[in-house]
View 1 (tube, rainbow, N blue to C red):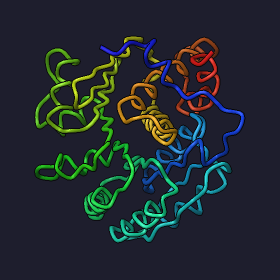
View 2 (view 1 turned 45 degrees about the vertical axis):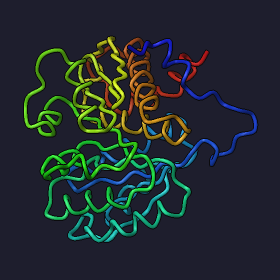
View 3 (view 1 turned 135 degrees about the vertical axis):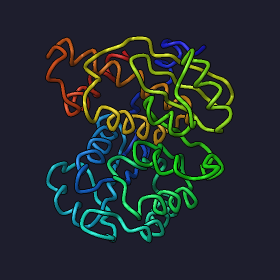
Amino acid sequence: MTSSIDVRAWLPRPRPDEDKDARGRVLVVGGSLRYSGAPLLAAVGAARAGAGIVTLAVARSLALALAGRAPEVTFLPLDEASPGVIDASAARGIAAALGEGRYRALILGPGLGHDPTTDPLVLGVLARATVSVVLDADGLNAVARTQRWPERLPQGTVLTPHAREAARLAGEEVAGARVEWARDRARSWGAVLVLKGPCTVVASPDGEVFAHDRPNPALATAGSGDVLSGCIGALLASGLSPYRAACAGVLLQGEAAAIVTTELGVRGVVATDLAAALPRALVSLTA
């Protein structure tokens, strides 16, 4: 069982000579008219967790709407099937961006919604991915609707489901001991599994497990999962392995939640509060 002490040691420490490329680039693909904030939260979470450059790939009309809300984020406008809906053909453009070799991590799924183009887009991106992928939210739902979906995952994929999404992936409810359930599924799926909940469990295909046993109700707010995906993506981009990045991302977000709770309490905490606290959480965990 991996301990919190182990995970703290994995967090990257700043170097005097590093530049933004050394800290790593993250590409976030997601968004729809209904859930335009989700990919933005993932992108800001990645930036606050230490990524050197974060690019948000969204439907062209959403790029125009979101561009002024996070000046630290760059944008890759994508072709639309309808307003706010990324066309499935955009998978080729996403693959081309990844193929340039600049990005080290891809976050796929936050806020994509469920449109006729969603599943082919997600599967098309996965088939062409050349970097580690954090698959979240509607990206998870898209693969859950696909036969033999684990075979579609590129090597180094991190799955970040809550219990309902995990049940869709498994075709059965999350039951019994969560640690054993997560370990078994990570092995059978060949991916790192982040089973979110009051006690979030991270499991690797090799049988390694980390259980973050510091429940914090401040995390029970819309968008906290998007911020977590951003954290994991940033840590992947820094050079951590998928399992270590997932563990460190969970620990980092948990520390941010603890900081926010001390300052604001629990009720009324929103995902942007969690993202804003990530730099202080990094200081706390790496001191």
